[in-house]
Length: 90
Image (cartoon, rainbow, N blue to C red):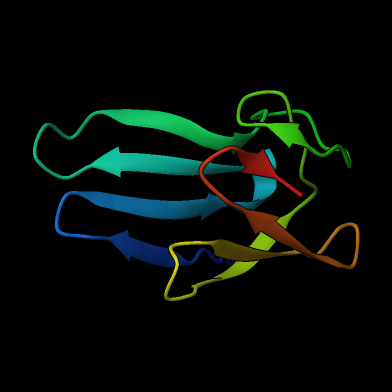
């Protein structure tokens, strides 16, 4: 099996990684190597908007970021482009 993931750098301190098979996005602190869940609930797929930590994704794939810092994720299991801002996912 080939495992595909996408990376997105947030400044020089953080790296976001799609964890497609676990239905979440991981955030890696590049200074401490500490890994946290940034969006979705790892291991539980679904479709739910809401604050970070209370939302659900299904096979998150490509990511991009706009000039305002909003992150866009292709939620491939739901065939939907999701918006993640500083408050949550929509």
